[in-house]
Amino acid sequence: MKKQVLPKVEQGPRPSLSFTEKRFGKAPQHLADLDRAERRAVVEDFGYREFRADQLSKHYFEHLTTDPSDMTDLPANQRDGLCEKMFPQLITKVRDQIADQGKTIKTLWRLFDGAIVESVLMKYSDRATLCISSQAGCGMACPFCATGQAGLQRNLSTAEIVEQLRMNMVSAHSGVFGEPVRISNIVFMGMGEPLANYKSVIGALHRMIEPSPQGFGISARNITVSTVGMVPAIDRLADEGFPVTLAVSLHAPDDSLRDDLIPINSRFKVQELLDAARRYFLKTGRRVSIEYALIKDMNDHAWRAELLAHELNSRGKGWVHVNPIPLNPTPGSIWTAASKAAEKKFVDTLLAAGIATTVRDTRGSDIDGACGQLAAEVVDRDHVAKRAAKAQQAVEARIAEHRQAPNNLQEILSEPSLCEEEEES
Ligand code: SF4
Image (cartoon, rainbow, N blue to C red; front, side, top):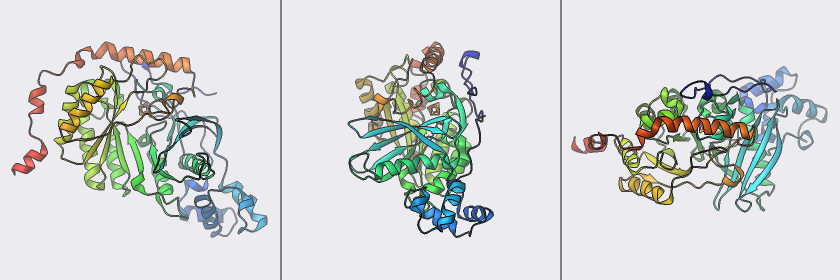
């Protein structure tokens, strides 16, 4: 087993980010890595007629199969060869864990080189949503997140991301929830920072959104890509022309705290991040989600809700939706969720300021399937727990003074908002 790239919590005052993957191996090329022209060219290179690529694509994206015995429209003497070349096995199910009275299923997948990732399938009354992983591990080192404590193993290929969706679609269709269910929504909120694996994620979005036989034909509006704040990549995503929802994991409205909670904030500050989020809204017309894990006596103060509302309103009205989420403590965590009273106060403050706000549920928290908990069991649990406790203690030692509102809070809050300026002009 090769060594993982770990954030250097022990070696410095702040954890360092890790963008360099320690490659276990490159996933073999798969049909889902390619667009239509590339598929046709590859199939022809293998010595088959290029239109066979369209037939294979139809089986894959419409019938969700890679089994040659299902492909009776292909010549019998070509089926095995074509499938072997175009559908190498990339992911294998290790096990399912079920929670929420059978409505949440977390699946552990082993990749071709032994790396492990997870996906979480959630059934709601009106839809099924799949939470998908884009990296094995994560290099962003957020101290409240189990995945971050495990470090980055490697980026997933486009097809490794897409295969998580196809295999879950097969399960959902075959009645894993007691009746056939169609997966209509996808959130990139599993393991990894999606925008740190930009090329593969964009490829996966193409396969998810394009109509069959190019892709699964899922509405871009039902897909959410999350980020902790890769500002240049947010602008690139806005230019791709997909109206996917952007979810910004903000967790603090001030740099003094966010520098510690989200280490990427040392590169891209809150103001730059919210400006990029606003540009994303203006370019795509999609309301941006702000994710905010409420941590007890850390970021749950009413004054922080006021500051957050001010920062959002100062960039316009109606462009953003805040999702406070009670923290799911990870193994070893010394932090816990905000009290119900603090949560209510936080939400009420945002609502009173005219910010659309909905507390998100913590589906799957009892199977470590909730946000920030994926991979808690994939790597050595004790090791992750020790790292989490150490990282959090380091933050605790630094942030005591940031629990109090800054002296100039009233001055900041009284700055005119963009809307007020627009109304006056
Ligand atoms: S919160 Fe997201 S970005 Fe941060 S370490 Fe965890 S998976 Fe990575």
